Length: 406
Image: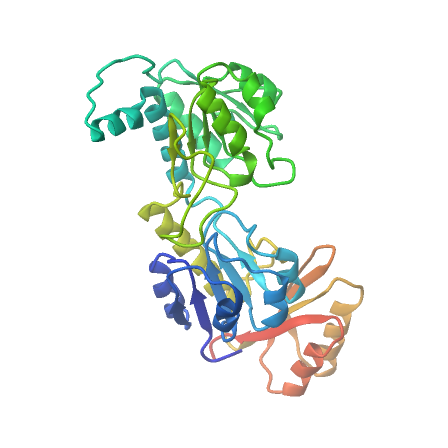
C-alpha cells in the first residue's frame, strides 16, 4: 500500500473532508470546479481516491486509464455521473451520501410552495421595478391545500411531515408500497394524484422510467392553477411543455432547481425555456446546498473513503459487494481481494495460505453476479512471494493489504 496516498477533491467539497482525509494519512489536493478531458486525466494520474459532486463525470475511459484509482467519493446523493460498472471492473469502490441533505431539500420544497401560493417572487420583482401592488388576488395560504408528493422516499416523507405541520393535506404516489407518515394518504396511480393535488412536488430518481414522465399529457390532468415543484432530477420534466403550460395560464406556478443540461461551473452561461416564464422560481441546483448539508455530506463520504482505505470496508458502496470486518487486531495482516465471481477462487487462496502455514483468523466474502470481494485477516508474515502469488491469480481484479498495530 502506498505510504502517502493522494486524495483529489473537486467541485468545492466542504473543507471538513480535508481534515478527515488528512487525518487518515492522505495528501489532499483541492480543485474548486469540475474537471474534464485532459485536465481531469492529468489530475487523476496520481490520485488514489477522488471526491466529486454532480458535475464531474467519470466514465469507462477514466477507469481504464487510471487503474490506480482505488475509490470514488460522490459528495452528493446521486451517482449517475460515474460509470459504476467500469469502476467495479477495476475494483474501485464508489461511495455516496444518499440521505445527508434530505432536510435541506425538504425545507426548500416547502418554502417554494409557500412562495408560489403567495406570489412572493412576483411581488418582489414588481417592487424592484418600482411598482406597488398590494392586491391579494391569486394569493393563498397553504393551509388546507392538497400537496401531492411523487416519490415518498427519504426526502418526500420529510416534505410530508413539514407540510402537514403547516396544515396542508398530503397525498403521495410511489411505485413501491410505503408507510404513510402522519395523516398522509397514498394514491394508486400518478394520474389520480395529479387530478387531486393543488401542488405537485417531485422526489424521484433518474431512471429510464422517470425520464420525461412529466409532460403535456400529465399537465393536462392537473387542475387549473396547480403548482409544480421539481427538486429531483432535471430529466423528469419536459420543460418546453411546462413553459407552455405556465405561459397559457394552465398551471399556476413552478419551482425548478434541476435542469436537463446544467452549466459546469459558476459563471457559465445558462439558457432554459423556463426563463421569463410567469410565476416560475428558477434556482441553480441548490436544493441540498446548505452549509449544514454540505458539511454532513463531506463528513460522511470522507469517513467512508478513510475507512475503505485503512480497513477495506465497502459497507454502503454502491457498486462493489458490501464487506466489513471489525478493526484489524494487533499483529495481523488484512488481505483485501477483489476478483471475478467464478468458482474456486477462495479455495485457491486458502490453499496458498495453508501451504505457507498461515492461519486465517477472520474472513468475509460477498459477491454480485460479476464480482466477489473477500477480506481475510491472517497472521502477519514476511513472505512477499505469497502475496505475489495471490495477486497473480488469473481471477484477481485488485489486491492490496493493510496491517494492524505491530
